[in-house]
Image (cartoon, rainbow, N blue to C red; front, side, top):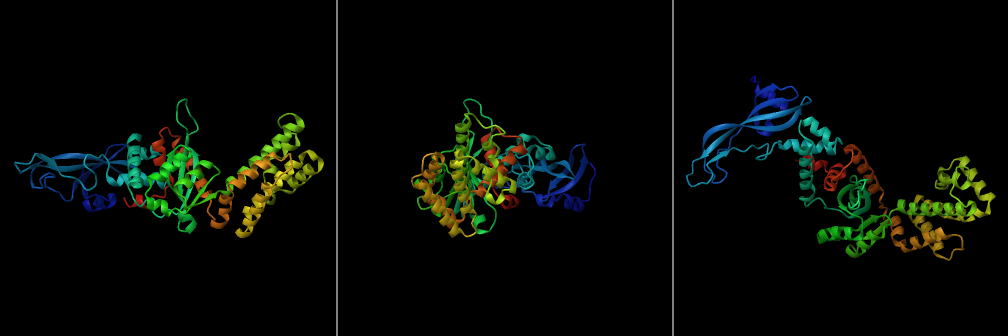
Length: 437
């Protein structure tokens, strides 16, 4: 070991914030070893608070932040004392360090650094562990424990949630026999986004997709939280609507526009497939008119190319067998037009007209449209609420997309608890709390 200038070395390695001063350093190949000593030493017995008599020193080894790209190990010379109180049960004690918990192998700022790499830099646990020169299991354990404390031990985590987004999410795409469902219920706070104060944030995730899953989560929250939720956005799944009706009776439900349009698109596709079978007796092939135009049928009219418009006009004008498809397509476009209208009040009127028109008796041959009409009528209050409130599940779907990216970073997950906590780090907007650690 070679002595170094303490002021320069302490400034470069920022050991002053650890309560340590550097006494030496060595190059150990893939590691940088730094010798240090505590700036201040507490000699009081942790049990009786009596001052102790210095006995000897021990070397405590800690993992610290990398230095110029190399993993770092702190070798801290820690004094040990003998308790001078003859009635005290503790005979020998070691002074505690302000930079690390007793028995810990990492400094506290390494915990913050790990979470910053995962939350801000979107690094994988494996890459973070490699930078520190430690194992994957240790880094993952530290990240999971710290995130659990940041989220579930912080009473302010759910503060101010007036607009709640609920959606399902598939956390893994492989399922062995006997394993539980791969579906989870995602809960997102939309209040900052609607208020213009910040992005939406993931606030929790629960295994399963059912009314009982959401009801259980809501019942676990305090009455103040439930009373503060004014709007809940969701997809067309009836289970979530049932849970909100039971446990948040004063909250307004909003059925997301994306899912309403997607439902109409499914009925349009179903009508096309039915007519394909009725007219040809088989599934569609590449040269069949209905199959060739399947994408154009689902495209908004504003985005149709001139060639696509000509093909659709030709399709409607050449065969009376396709009248049912044309009618279904027109209602599909009317739904999109209502949502896309720049004036929400006018859009609400257009949507109301569509819902009431489909509610009335439809002629035979429009089975898919009749099914759509029944669904829209049953959820009409939730659908029309969008035009009054402007809240939707779009940001929730965006978070679902980021979680797909997280699974790509991690090359998949096998442990759901780890996935939930990593998702909260990745999309929970915890950066300010992480930086404050």
